[in-house]
Length: 381
Image (cartoon, rainbow, N blue to C red; front, side):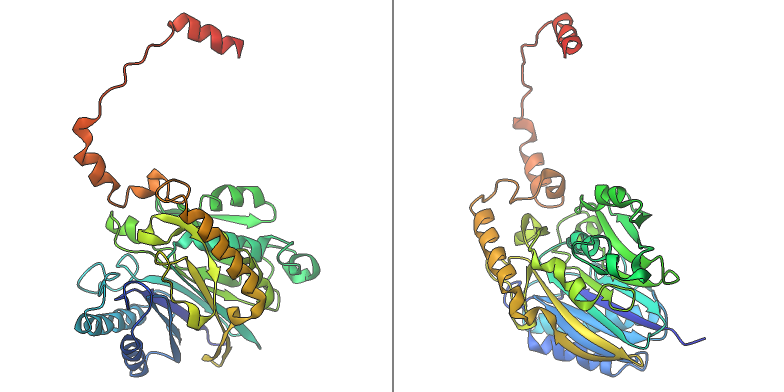
């Protein structure tokens, strides 16, 4: 039996430079230094999206391994010390507790991992987003694995005809459900369309022995802390080719800059702009939300690459459209739908404002028709 490989992407914001737009080079150097000294890893690559550090690691220890998660935690702690020295904004903000407890899930950092037997050719894409939430992956993942207008492989490739299984997490009720495409297509859309609450965690092939195809970070910091503590800035791993979406099919959903939650203070909707790695430095209104795509070939556990996939001029139109959408939404200011709905604002300062003004609210004295007239009106309808 071939030895399995684990690909882990663990990310955190431990200090922005300047404000929320970038990661200082010294933090990146510190992260590389800590990972390079570890005997646990086969290989590692340190990347960033805006002000978030992403640790891309390969190893043989399986998912949820305490030592790998501990290594990531210690890396972020070391970077936090550098951030404090430089007085960077929000130093250590994604580390919600002081001590590591065996797994970084629920402690602030975002995690996506998958374990698999390396194929003869193993191309993968690591998507990294900034100024948005985990639900930002719902539309792209649906299009990659369930929409034949985006992924013609669903029609052309016989190995895709059995479809894919979606593991969907309910972030509010902390539960999950597995739904299959194409049979349960409409059920999938019912849930993943509500991307503030329901998110796609994993996608599995139904025709390739249940092979894991995609894994995303689903941590929502506001749900963990019960208050606004920063944006979630999710990451996503997608395996490609040979019965899975091709690289081009996995990228195609991002040619449309769909609306996602996040942006300024995690309280606004905005277009998800695909951009090259060196241009993922959001500044306008701390945005608009960005996504970068790093492509790797995995060879004997080693990360060959990356290739900056959104550097292609073919995505220029999507970037232009994203800026136009941003112009339109910004003119709405504090009005919905630019500002998030009230159920999402409950994790910001909105509850404090409501509490402060509670005694000033008064009952509305309505003049209502007699009950008999209302009953008659209902019967008429």
